[in-house]
Structure formats: structure tokens, C-alpha cells
Image 1 (cartoon, rainbow, N blue to C red):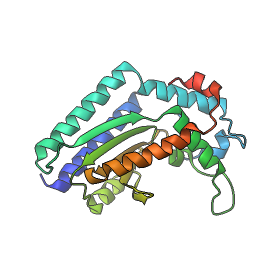
Image 2 (tube, rainbow, N blue to C red; image 1 turned 30 degrees about the horizontal axis):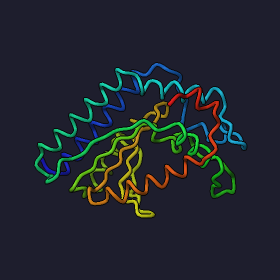
Image 3 (cartoon, rainbow, N blue to C red; image 1 turned 90 degrees about the vertical axis):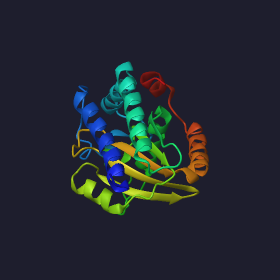
Image 4 (cartoon, helix red, strand yellow; image 1 turned 60 degrees about the vertical axis):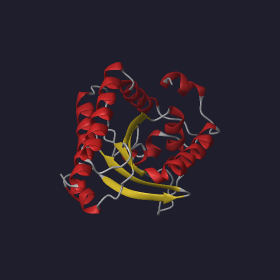
Length: 226
């Protein structure tokens, strides 16, 4: 197996995990391409009840014990297979997270207030805004990803888009997947080089500190839990 094949396999394993969870999920779904942020968040930052309920139910599903077991099994499998590939000097790190409620609220409001090229606020698809309710991160000492691998996965509709974020001390490859369905909440994969880990973690801390000072309605916290 080549390095490119190993990376492709790891991303496909993440896509398969997303597909499995998305098909098993029986809660309310919506067409996340048709719905815009301004459709579900008003100018005062209030989230409409039906969409809020949809978010609550999905987050709760991602916190169920059965899902946590699958989540740990996925992390263990991908870590071991990457380590056994022989392409890394340091042990690869694979971890996952469910997006925090204050982060969801902050992101919805940020997109609600963002002006598009036509001068209109909030005209962004929900699938482009809430594309990381569940996140997977690979931290590798060899993170040179061949763009042809990603391009092929996009052509196959395994991933929807990808880009290299290099801003304010943060460097990471971001990959988004919805397995070709606009009714599935997209997931995110981040691939970091281990040399960027400390700087990236600091950048995340700065962003999280900002989110803590974002006005977050207590009613949403009570509804959505931790």
C-alpha cells in the first residue's frame, strides 16, 4: 500500500462511519442545501424552534452510549492501521469530538450576520455553515496529502469539498463529507502536521475564548444540554 492509498483508505473509513451513522439516525431531517441560515435564525439571533429541535435531537444521538462505543472503535481502528502502515515515525493521533453548543450558536450567528456578494446577510446554506457538528482529526508527522487523492474522492462524491486553512498561526487541511446527501448533517475531517500541533491548539484556544464571551441564551443551553 502506498502512502496515498493509506490516506485514501483512512478518509474512506471516516466516510463509511458517517454513512453508517447517518442512515441509522431516525430523527427529523431537512434539506440542508435548500435551507439558509436566515431561514432559521432571525436578526436578533433567535433560532427557530423546529430547527433547534432538529439540532438537539442530532446532538443527543451523537452522545448516546452506543455511538460513543462506535466512536472509540473507529479511532482505535484508524490509529492502528495508520501506525502499522510504516509511513510515520511518531504514532498517529486520531481523535473525534461533538461540536459544543456555544460553538454552534456562535457559528449560526456569525453566518447570519455575514454579508454575501449581493449585499444580503445570512444567505448561506445550512450545510455550509453547520458542516462540523461531528469532527475527526488526524495528527500526523507526515501530512503531505496529494491533491489528486482528494480530487478523486470529491469526484466520487465521498467528500463534498476540501481546503487548506492557513491563517493566524493555524495550518490544517479541512475536508467535508455528506456522502452525497443534503439530508445528512456533514462531518469534518481535519488533518494536521504534528509540527503545527501546538500552534493550532493555541489558535483553537483563542477562538474558544472568544466563544465563551459570545452571548448565549440560557434557554438554549437548558434545551441542548452540555
